[in-house]
Length: 276
Image (cartoon, rainbow, N blue to C red):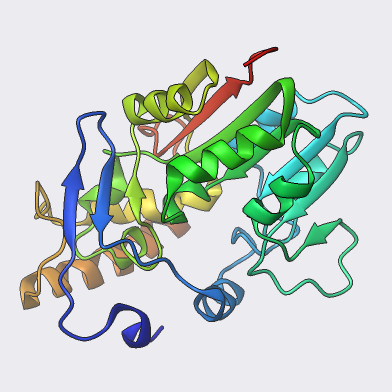
């Protein structure tokens, strides 16, 4: 993927940690439609644009709390794989990057902000699975999600966990702009929910799934170069990244998904108060 047009040659990025624990890049330059429409089709069946995604713990735990007939909005839905987990619900997916052509699921090429303006207080549940880390303004993103909820409605957000195996991969560009703009831990998720007027039900670490197996094994196989420096223009670091990918692919194929691996993602479940 050529990101020169977005990131510009010679631009410097800082990686910062806020008092609440949020780690973020600055400036925040998010991937555009062309970036994602070129990136995601190259992924396997576990990718976000596959309608037959592998079983996921975040989907399963959220679906268990959604009743039949409830209205569900899935933001950044990709191919709408979550819809299959809530067959009795009235599902709408939003993804302004996904090329919607003849999909069986109701997916709309619409931004969250524009959808919220016409659907305030409409949904029993609003979800964003591995989307928040791509948002340039996460506070506004969650506030717009909250506004789409009915009073008493549930919000679900899953994100990669900081720190976890993916932070041990040197020069791991998937975890940097224009792909990931923020890194989240439990404390940062709780702070985000509270500032959005939500009551936190839980912030839970999720068991490792097939969709994150490669990242886990890459982190395990990578030489431990990262500490407070995660990106470095060095042949040694570039070589370490190449080695971690080769070894990670081999370990994934041979060892599969370990049952008791340290978690690599978090799920926030929060409720909108009955009255604000």
